[in-house]
Amino acid sequence: MSEFRYITAKDIEWFYTGMPSPFLSVADIVQFVKEMGTVTTQLTPTYWNIVYGAQVWAQLNLEQNIFGILPKTTWPRSGWRAISALSTGASNIVTTETGVIPGPTYPTVKVLRTKPKIVATSFEISEVMEELAARSADDIWAGLNQLRTWFGREFGKQINQLLGAKAVGSNASDVPALNPDAQLISLDQVVASKNEVAGVYGSNVPSQIVTNINIYGLDRMGADEWSGAVVVHNNGTPAALTDEMIQTLNTQTMVKGANPAGRIWLTGPDTWAKINALYLQFVRYMPLTEARIAPGPMGWRYVDEGHEAGFRVAQLYGYPIVLSVDVPKDTIGRIYLLDTTDFEGLGAPRLGVAVLRPVEYFETSAQHFPILRQFVFRGVYRFIGDTVARFLPGQGKIRDIK
Image (cartoon, rainbow, N blue to C red):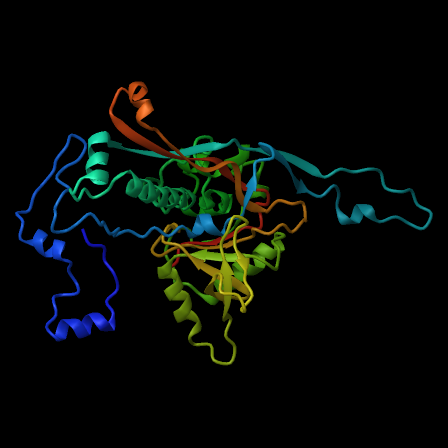
């Protein structure tokens, strides 16, 4: 089988001077006149066809930007403390020249917790199919090497989809229950609030919605309302995106304590088109600028213009905009303003992914046939960790936009 290659100017010259076709080897020409054959085994349908070859082209968007922009840390512990209220009001710290020093006070401390979640995907190929793919002239669409590569890419995409799962919809039927004790916590679970839920569902809140937003052992619909994020919404009814919505989100998250430097926007390609159209009318002042960023284990970071690493993105009011097809949608994708910084300097991000075990790959060999009781090779990708938001009130979201 001939591998594909780029056509050169020399190939074109040979072709038009009557030389044998530079685009096919002799073996390819012979193969074209063969009768189209098939190979079928118990594990596969008819995948073999000598004319089309073994190369398979994915027709899917495998982008993983949500997972890419979140910083990753080790798993130091399964719980953390959060201060939810100051120790006293400002008027209580006033004292006269010879007055009594105010008595000791303590802030309100809440304990939050989560546990590592396991996500995994597996695949297998029979020994017969592997031998046909590796040793024979049969053009099986994928052997173990190809499957290993494909499922590695697919696994990253699946993690991205878990992080992009919608927690609060426009009605009860469009959002499944997201069990915070069993699966990776999504960004929409983190960036949610009682005000958002009440605006969409009124007093008749579905039980799965309460389950979805009560992450880390919090009662966000009750005593822990302080942990709600900033959500700019229109009570579940789509409305046109405006600059006022964007500025409201920006300012209200800062009022709640978000770091005014180092945040990042996350939205979908359809919403990005709306943002572009929104600011084309600005001539003298353009809030959209440009920056170069790069995702990595530590999340997103700016890259100096002199370096070739990273990719160019737009900036809105000084914060880079990253696009993902897995961002939850209403009519169009929601807009998130995320604080992933280490503003306190404690060595951990305000929002990120805590990793107990990074993505690992496990594979059986012929020695495992007796254990599996099958002549198959099996591969498994696994990740253990969870989304950890050490700072909740200053995360932001715009929803109900069109």
